[in-house]
Length: 497
Image (cartoon, rainbow, N blue to C red; front, side, top):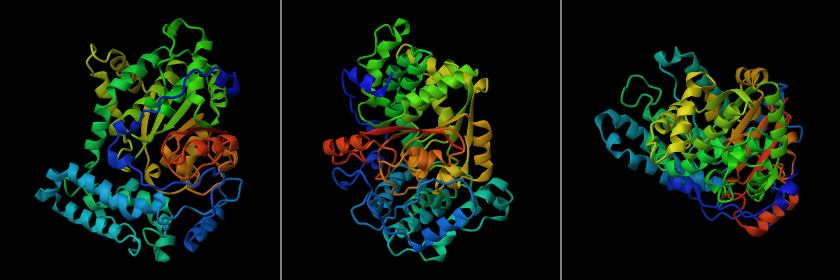
């Protein structure tokens, strides 16, 4: 069934209930930056000499790149932009301040005295972001240097930052994606996250309370969703619906769900899909479903989910993974997770495991479908149908075409499909560059990604590609904040190399 015919079956629009109930307010709040109306092409931006040199150096390595000319990266130098507000104000005044308030008891103990002083020094840098020059991470201790993974991660950051450190760039003049990820790595350095000499701060997650709050407020919405997931057909339409759940989460209008879904004709699900497609600026659901059908015919493939946030969003990722295994599309799901706390709500392996354990232990009388889902998820972990993989690359500010060889070769050799979730991951797919909004996703991402890739993204930043011109014009006429408020989304599929 085509996208057009699905839309002709449209019964009701998505209920755009805010997902902010599942995230701290300081994570979701946006300033008053309004993108230009009817904008279908990103405006040109100045490129720093250091960024241009870094691009040239990487291009000389001969690795796969987008087939289109690569635009310059976003910087944080324009007052009024989301990037400028983030690096000059929001990280310090909202994120780090709130993190301090949530952990005030810990920070005011003797064991956290050094962490608190280091955190304050980092905040002082950010208060003077326009004049504070970037520096490298501090040298590793002798004990840390013995850890091969830690030494490799330190070197990766050194190599990424070196052009900007040598050029004397500040928190604002270096590429935004680099500095925004780096501020969280510097925060880990400040609190001693990787320093085993202090047991109190070693591997201590300063965002755990915020993530736990997101988990605890997810149950009611998840109960409604899990009832639907259990009834999904083992068809192309089932895959489309599961992916739509992962994209839209609690914005999906499930009021039109067929009453007897388990015994319903497949066509009745078209009504739900039509509603889910109404605010898509590009819809590759059918291409995705056809690819998944091919995997099902081959008795299942290996599917990676490059995870974004904990909380309810992670629950929808687990629901997608649940259906892919149960329907025979995947014989193994590999969750690609962050290797240290970052962006407040981003998910680590421990967050995924806590979500599964929590759902498996829910009160059956209150949340019967959510509990049953948690028990299924637990069985997938136990029988190795689901595996967790943390990698430092997922918490770094490099474009995804700069993926380390080891990770890239693994995806190329072993992954039949990768789902890329969330806005920060999507920005990295695009290198956080000002692409023309209508530039084909295949030419920007599919031309270099090491395996077939599907990006599920609601728009929350001023970058994008692969969007239909007419849909972009419609979105900009409906909503001044169409680029940043999560109302609109895209489903992109690329073949990979």
